[in-house]
Length: 280
Ligand SMILES: Nc1nc2c(ncn2[C@@H]2O[C@H](COP(=O)(O)OP(=O)(O)OP(=O)(O)O)[C@@H](O)[C@H]2O)c(=O)[nH]1
Ligand SMILES: [Mg+2]
Image (cartoon, rainbow, N blue to C red; front, side):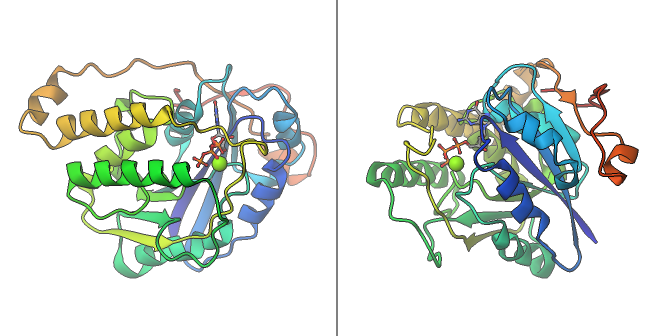
């Protein structure tokens, strides 16, 4: 049995969070058990309230004390994860949890270390979307491929599934959009078997809440170059030795209801547990 930790960072996602988690909960895949970890990133809408009312939809609920960016929320989730594998799941409805089956196939069949869900490689359904967004994605994938000698078509997909032991979470120094490039720069050189599978994508518009902007690509390219320098360049051992590990950031609060409350379908515990081992 493979344990898969599904990390869901959520910032002001009241419109979609319950529907998204319900779709995750419907997934049944032979040989795989899911551990759903939701990290509320200091939402100011009803996201947290809705989550507290549905403890049946997750194994862990963490809350960042202040909004720290997707990367900070993901890092807190990674610190709490106990699965053999990890998968990131955005809290909107742009990606389909029904695709977990596809993403897991290379793991179950070929013992893959890393599986990327590509929005640009022959998906069944893709919503026609922003031209410059696609160009930006292609520039980022090309840059990553040049530095890592890989053939990825979509490095900025949300669906990134990897063997948890390949990532040194404590070494992650970024907390914004560029964190995904830092994570991949660490994992790809250590992964022996890497696959990409087409996934469905229903991109939302800016009017519907999309937040990523063109200027974010600058930090991502910086993260790709510094990831290459630290992991693959001739100076990599020196750079790694000189690098100071980032200190613990703000610790998330663990709002996971006590098991008895969950079993009864009752209200979640009012006193938050200390987040065990979790640092952001
Ligand atoms: N934008 C943003 N998202 C956050 C933050 N913290 C957590 N998230 C979550 O990170 C995920 C990705 O954010 P989105 O706004 O969906 O990103 P997007 O603009 O749709 O871009 P992609 O989905 O990556 O193409 C969502 O689940 C957010 O709720 C934050 O501070 N800012
Ligand atoms: Mg999104």
